[in-house]
Length: 387
Image 1 (cartoon, rainbow, N blue to C red):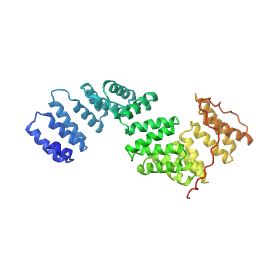
Image 2: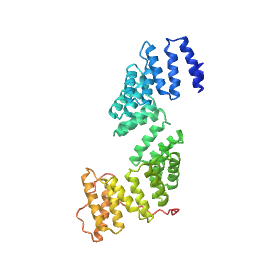
Image 3: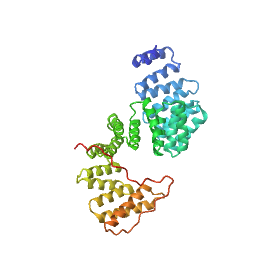
């Protein structure tokens, strides 16, 4: 009867039934386990933890289910290290995939990435893992800088469950990074089919559509992401970028200001605010550029934009100083960004034509198989912004 009530969501009545069972069978750990489970579903994790401890005392053999539940309760009450210990006990007691993946998640929450990767490797080598575990292991591999291993795990997750949206999102991110926009769009559409309200899928789909120059569809997706997550700085930032590309600086400024209010120390958001204000002819643009430089003074992208701002404002001496500093920052890098290097060379050529004597030259553009495009894109005929 207690199980029926618990399945129906009537947890308090189920607790009363289980307490009656405990009075009748005080040495049976099963009613105690069910009481602890109901308490956990009520988010009363401390009481649930105590009930699981009592159930563990009554069991004659190590119970991996109890150990896994104790690990989750310890995690929820803030005892992360103790949760890791319980998860290790669950693995040793034969908890299988559930215990191994729980241990990996706890280690990842404790910022022990190598330990989490080792736990996932052990789970994958010892058990026939499901799509969720494969997707989580693949995402961790991608985070750790192993794209080949990540691709194999994420592909296995999707082969097992094509609607596994976490794996689809991670694979789409890899494909976008490698400029395979069409394949990324297919993965993102599959992710949205499984989870139509997924904010990350809408945001990534919007960015992929931006790369295809489908601006109206991109704005629609990014606006959905911003509406679904109004407190997400990343969603507001992405929508601001799209609005800037669509030549709507006033709307872009509103979205970027929201992102900056949520994450005031994100230099790229502040830089984009400066660009939007400059396009609006607002005198506060210089303050935004200066703030971006203060937040990330060693970033060549920030510095070259500052140099461009000085040049457009007629401050050629300051522009020359910023360009020289950008050249120095690029020369420190083992592999300077080709697009930044090309932009810096163009800026220095313009300054030289304006009569400025340059003390530094931009670093050589690295030779890649895929050289960056040098042609200027056609001017899009977009509607003006609503001011």
